[in-house]
Length: 174
Figure 1 (cartoon, rainbow, N blue to C red):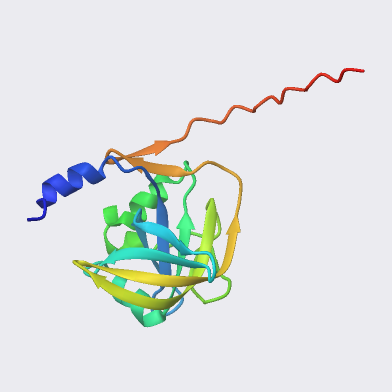
Figure 2 (figure 1 turned 135 degrees about the horizontal axis):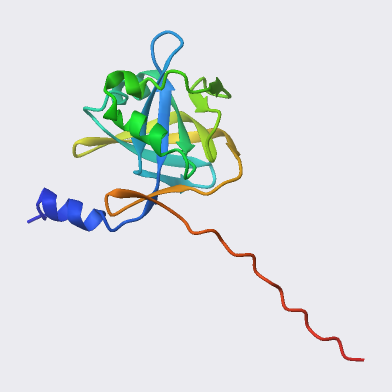
Protein backbone atom coordinates (compact mmCIF):
# COMPACT_ATOMS: atom_id res chain seq x y z
CA UNK A 1 0.00 0.00 0.00
CA UNK A 2 1.50 3.37 -0.96
CA UNK A 3 2.15 6.12 1.58
CA UNK A 4 -0.48 8.81 1.98
CA UNK A 5 -0.12 12.26 0.44
CA UNK A 6 0.98 13.92 3.70
CA UNK A 7 3.77 11.39 4.27
CA UNK A 8 4.89 11.76 0.67
CA UNK A 9 4.93 15.58 0.84
CA UNK A 10 6.77 15.52 4.16
CA UNK A 11 9.56 13.35 2.76
CA UNK A 12 9.85 15.40 -0.45
CA UNK A 13 10.34 18.61 1.55
CA UNK A 14 13.81 17.28 2.31
CA UNK A 15 14.80 17.15 -1.37
CA UNK A 16 16.64 20.35 -2.28
CA UNK A 17 16.12 21.49 -5.85
CA UNK A 18 16.69 24.46 -8.06
CA UNK A 19 13.78 26.72 -8.96
CA UNK A 20 12.80 27.27 -12.57
CA UNK A 21 9.98 28.79 -14.55
CA UNK A 22 8.66 26.85 -17.51
CA UNK A 23 7.30 29.20 -20.16
CA UNK A 24 5.19 28.66 -23.25
CA UNK A 25 3.30 30.92 -25.63
CA UNK A 26 -0.24 32.08 -24.91
CA UNK A 27 -2.61 33.04 -27.69
CA UNK A 28 -1.40 36.22 -29.32
CA UNK A 29 2.00 37.56 -28.28
CA UNK A 30 1.94 36.75 -24.58
CA UNK A 31 3.48 34.02 -22.49
CA UNK A 32 2.39 31.79 -19.66
CA UNK A 33 4.82 30.74 -16.94
CA UNK A 34 4.69 28.18 -14.17
CA UNK A 35 7.21 27.75 -11.35
CA UNK A 36 8.53 24.20 -11.21
CA UNK A 37 11.09 22.29 -9.24
CA UNK A 38 10.21 18.99 -10.94
CA UNK A 39 12.65 19.37 -13.82
CA UNK A 40 15.57 17.15 -14.71
CA UNK A 41 18.04 16.35 -17.42
CA UNK A 42 17.20 13.06 -19.13
CA UNK A 43 19.79 12.43 -21.85
CA UNK A 44 22.97 13.96 -23.24
CA UNK A 45 22.66 12.41 -26.71
CA UNK A 46 20.24 13.64 -27.81
CA UNK A 47 19.99 16.48 -25.27
CA UNK A 48 16.68 15.84 -23.47
CA UNK A 49 15.03 17.22 -20.34
CA UNK A 50 11.83 16.26 -18.55
CA UNK A 51 9.36 18.53 -16.76
CA UNK A 52 6.40 17.34 -14.70
CA UNK A 53 3.29 19.52 -14.94
CA UNK A 54 0.01 18.98 -13.08
CA UNK A 55 -2.81 18.27 -15.52
CA UNK A 56 -4.94 20.99 -13.90
CA UNK A 57 -2.20 23.64 -14.27
CA UNK A 58 -2.96 26.55 -16.60
CA UNK A 59 0.11 25.83 -18.72
CA UNK A 60 -0.44 22.08 -19.16
CA UNK A 61 -2.66 22.18 -22.25
CA UNK A 62 -0.69 25.04 -23.82
CA UNK A 63 2.60 23.12 -23.60
CA UNK A 64 0.93 20.16 -25.32
CA UNK A 65 -0.66 22.36 -28.00
CA UNK A 66 2.39 24.57 -28.71
CA UNK A 67 4.78 21.57 -28.71
CA UNK A 68 7.49 23.80 -27.23
CA UNK A 69 8.54 25.19 -23.86
CA UNK A 70 11.51 26.90 -22.22
CA UNK A 71 13.00 26.07 -18.84
CA UNK A 72 14.31 29.24 -17.20
CA UNK A 73 16.55 28.53 -14.19
CA UNK A 74 16.26 31.31 -11.63
CA UNK A 75 18.92 33.32 -9.81
CA UNK A 76 18.79 33.80 -6.06
CA UNK A 77 17.37 37.34 -6.42
CA UNK A 78 14.37 36.20 -8.48
CA UNK A 79 12.05 35.05 -5.68
CA UNK A 80 9.32 37.58 -6.62
CA UNK A 81 9.32 36.29 -10.20
CA UNK A 82 9.03 32.72 -8.94
CA UNK A 83 6.08 33.72 -6.74
CA UNK A 84 4.31 35.35 -9.71
CA UNK A 85 4.72 32.29 -11.90
CA UNK A 86 3.62 30.06 -9.00
CA UNK A 87 0.19 31.69 -9.26
CA UNK A 88 0.35 33.75 -6.07
CA UNK A 89 -1.05 36.72 -8.02
CA UNK A 90 -3.77 34.80 -9.82
CA UNK A 91 -3.89 33.89 -13.51
CA UNK A 92 -2.56 37.24 -14.69
CA UNK A 93 0.54 36.72 -12.56
CA UNK A 94 1.28 33.61 -14.63
CA UNK A 95 1.26 35.77 -17.77
CA UNK A 96 4.45 37.46 -16.52
CA UNK A 97 3.49 40.75 -18.15
CA UNK A 98 6.33 43.25 -18.16
CA UNK A 99 9.00 40.54 -17.93
CA UNK A 100 11.50 40.77 -20.80
CA UNK A 101 11.68 37.71 -23.05
CA UNK A 102 12.70 36.67 -26.51
CA UNK A 103 12.23 33.82 -28.98
CA UNK A 104 15.29 31.75 -29.81
CA UNK A 105 14.75 28.42 -31.63
CA UNK A 106 11.29 26.95 -30.97
CA UNK A 107 9.21 30.08 -30.47
CA UNK A 108 8.83 29.41 -26.74
CA UNK A 109 9.42 32.52 -24.61
CA UNK A 110 12.91 32.58 -23.10
CA UNK A 111 13.25 34.94 -20.13
CA UNK A 112 15.95 37.56 -20.69
CA UNK A 113 17.23 37.78 -17.13
CA UNK A 114 17.73 34.37 -15.56
CA UNK A 115 20.68 32.21 -14.54
CA UNK A 116 20.30 29.75 -17.42
CA UNK A 117 17.71 28.73 -19.99
CA UNK A 118 16.85 25.77 -22.22
CA UNK A 119 14.64 26.20 -25.30
CA UNK A 120 12.91 22.86 -25.92
CA UNK A 121 10.83 21.17 -28.61
CA UNK A 122 8.29 18.76 -27.14
CA UNK A 123 9.11 15.21 -28.31
CA UNK A 124 7.04 13.02 -25.96
CA UNK A 125 4.55 13.12 -23.12
CA UNK A 126 3.63 10.46 -20.59
CA UNK A 127 0.87 10.38 -18.00
CA UNK A 128 2.04 9.98 -14.43
CA UNK A 129 -0.72 10.12 -11.84
CA UNK A 130 -2.11 13.67 -11.69
CA UNK A 131 0.84 15.03 -13.75
CA UNK A 132 2.15 14.73 -17.28
CA UNK A 133 5.83 14.19 -17.92
CA UNK A 134 6.80 16.32 -20.92
CA UNK A 135 10.07 15.38 -22.62
CA UNK A 136 11.79 18.20 -24.46
CA UNK A 137 14.70 18.13 -26.90
CA UNK A 138 16.97 21.08 -26.11
CA UNK A 139 17.30 23.16 -29.28
CA UNK A 140 19.17 26.11 -27.72
CA UNK A 141 20.63 26.96 -24.30
CA UNK A 142 22.37 29.82 -22.54
CA UNK A 143 23.62 30.97 -19.17
CA UNK A 144 24.81 33.99 -17.22
CA UNK A 145 26.67 34.56 -13.96
CA UNK A 146 25.14 34.24 -10.54
CA UNK A 147 23.94 31.79 -7.93
CA UNK A 148 20.80 29.66 -8.15
CA UNK A 149 17.57 30.02 -6.22
CA UNK A 150 17.00 26.83 -4.20
CA UNK A 151 13.81 25.28 -2.77
CA UNK A 152 14.19 23.23 0.43
CA UNK A 153 11.97 22.60 3.45
CA UNK A 154 9.04 24.44 1.82
CA UNK A 155 11.04 27.68 1.57
CA UNK A 156 13.41 29.49 -0.75
CA UNK A 157 17.09 29.12 0.04
CA UNK A 158 20.35 30.36 -1.43
CA UNK A 159 23.79 28.87 -1.57
CA UNK A 160 26.61 30.37 0.44
CA UNK A 161 29.24 32.10 -1.66
CA UNK A 162 32.00 29.79 -2.72
CA UNK A 163 35.33 30.83 -1.30
CA UNK A 164 38.13 30.93 -3.82
CA UNK A 165 40.43 27.98 -3.47
CA UNK A 166 44.12 28.54 -3.17
CA UNK A 167 46.30 26.22 -5.09
CA UNK A 168 49.32 25.01 -3.30
CA UNK A 169 52.46 25.40 -5.26
CA UNK A 170 54.71 22.47 -5.11
CA UNK A 171 58.26 23.27 -4.24
CA UNK A 172 60.69 22.76 -7.02
CA UNK A 173 63.95 21.36 -5.83
CA UNK A 174 67.07 21.75 -7.80
